[in-house]
Length: 347
Image (cartoon, rainbow, N blue to C red; front, side):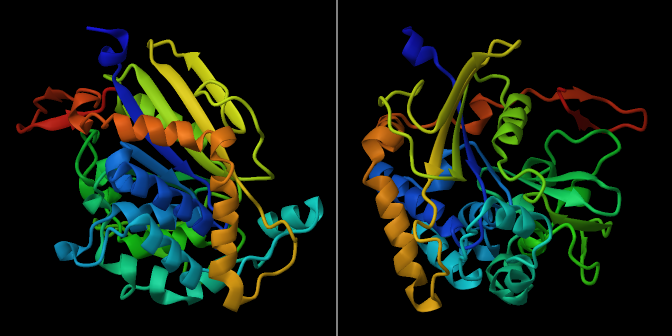
């Protein structure tokens, strides 16, 4: 068996949220779907999203009751974000970026006022976290206990639970997760509580204001989940300046690439695709918003030979991902004192 054939690759997608501009990431993913012939949830074993990136991840990965609405294709998800999140206003200076991130009324309250994404009767209201068609992780912040909090679909599905844990504690409605992910940590406390299936209450806000790029978290979760893999390959969609040009290679393409061997012998590869920002620096009128998002995504795709996207498409079109079961960390089974079986996390 050749080295290429023996590779067991865990594919991870990290999506950084940036309000309505997250639609640019959705358009890029739509192109990936088109060229590979596979939806995003079948291309990646794990999707990690923060802020509006979490909303995009859920639109593409959660399944509505009966499957009548969700999951959406990436193009439909892009339109949903363009219509459901407030208009993009690009910060003009470093100070305004910091002010909007730390103090701004920003997009959070306005996004929550649009119930198409955060309401119980909206798109995500009919989908629970346990319905995820691939592993899904969403970082937020527990404002009551002042610590990070992580929504994990595998826990909601009953995987890797500790003996004292139940899946209901990790089961949340998609609309509640969206409301938490879009909420600023310094927002007023009114209407900030969400309830798990177990009826436990949490006071949560978006983690993006504190950790805007979830790529490190994505790699960490993948190392815990997929110890049968010998390569963890993370594609990071984040927002920055113009794409840096360079050679087309997994070890060089993109804005920043890391490749190293962990202590467990798992090779890590990170391809960072830096999506374009608003070149004009002016507010975008609502009537021109969708066109503007497509212009930004087209400018990224026009440079695909240099930013690494073409290499990504070629690899994913030629090689189907392994099933989750071929990569998952084995669960140790033990008999608890009161009888019955409980899965024990490997870590």
